[in-house]
Image (cartoon, rainbow, N blue to C red; front, side, top):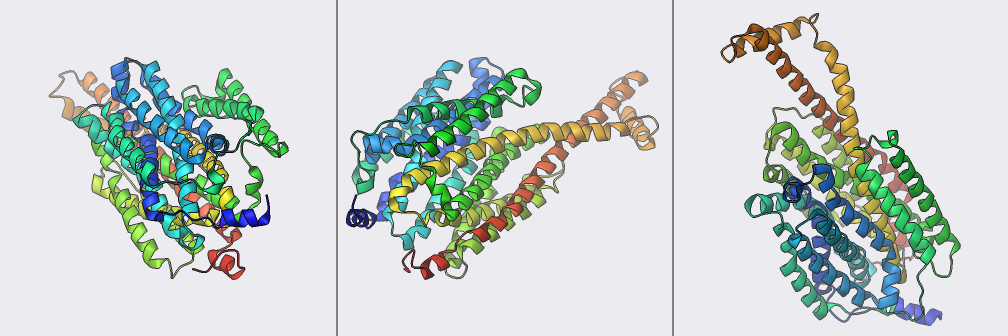
Length: 529
């Protein structure tokens, strides 16, 4: 292809208004990220409907993540095979239809299959929306476009538990999937009106699938997700089958990357973009941010339900201050866009997230919803401040022709980061809880006067219930042990939130390895607009 042809393609602009083009893309993307967490609070109700154990019901989440993890890195090939807009419309239609099938499911296998199809359809929506939005705007305006995109990515997982909890409590769990039908049909309609194919998004004749690469990808993603989802229940590497699955996942992962590096003519994903420092370090930062976002969104409602008896709706409502923080972050980042560089804004955002994690580390069992509002609010501000600029900064040095592949690779790694983060915090809470219980149980002995006095006080208050002093004393010790278990679990959550803070602080130096927008303009790599 001649340099003149490449320049024409690179300078292509859509005929329509880029903000109108963004409308269906944002709606489709928001539905996908919302459905990543909307099912979390409804799992106990699904388990009851299907008459299965809670750990079996988690396959509803796992099947969705596996499917989206498989399809995201394949997006570039599928766009070349069918045309990007055609593939986008098909994915949106499949996501909408399979959402209805999820709500109509009567058995666990049915909803697992439906959720897998939903993940196949929805997995492509995020990278496609990102790449189409990026190419629709000139480079000097992509910052504002990615502000809108980043806001949707952050708000979706936050609103998921709130929306899911409210729908489950007031209607029933199938409606968390049925609500996608009207929005999906509307997104299809306006997509048909506003979207147009770019020169580098058109169908390419004769393109072939990298079958070996796809095979390695399937084994890697499927085994990895199963290990992450079931590892804690199976005692991780204390289980032989977890060890075998981990070995298969690691070998398949290595084989996948080797096959993509060696296959220079027709790789499933083009890994040459990892040589771009902005893309590489920007992706690493986003992987950590996604892990913190999804993991914190998973454990906070769980903590409130498990330790304090909150309903699914109230525990989901606890995430609303984070949404308010996101709104504040969007407004503040827009006001400071011309005063602070994008790297500085990301640094500030990561620092704010770290401060929020440290504040979460000060919680106790006497808190109310209002007490977690401030740290949650800081999380929302920090996530928006960090996520919005880093998306644009990581992509700004790439050409338009590289965007679809880059978005696929980046979102694949972010998807894995979110899965690893969610699984890791589940294990950390379990292990930290055991550690703290082991450390504190030594105080529950007759040689500890404080323990003796507390047992005596509890036994005295229980005497109206039982006339047997021995039974009252036994019940008092049981109450104290239950308090110890609650305190152990609380400390486990506190330690995990502090790890979020440390992770946010650690990745700040990576920003110094990235080129700022100002230096790129100075070098003439992007236009000064």
